[in-house]
Length: 78
Length: 78
Image (cartoon, rainbow over all chains, first blue to last red; front, side):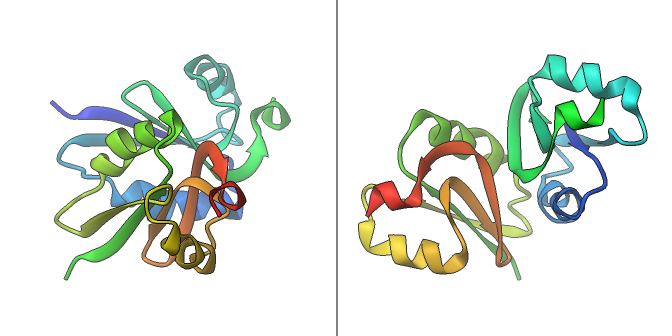
């Protein structure tokens, strides 16, 4: 069964690059990739915070959070 | 042909987690993964700096640099 991978982003250029490049480089046979745009889905900001996300873009892989470069603080999206 | 992916790290716990988790999640059919331990290969610190790496762990994917969480500044490894 594929492991969940969630990329949280906010539409910024750093975010889009991470989405289009790094997230797409994951092995899709092993990871089910979900892309969450927190600017458009603000109700999911709390879910991201609970997962440990502090800034975007961030990739949550099997429960572990990887902050990738730096686009914006999560607090700026509330 | 596989694209080059280089993970620069320095043996720290943040680095090792990124290596064992995120880097291993890449699609190995499309990416040829190279792991560079800058603590053990200090002659490669300049190569990392030229690629745009500012801190470790960092993943250089097809020429683009993704700093993943934060382990140590590159300057601390010189």
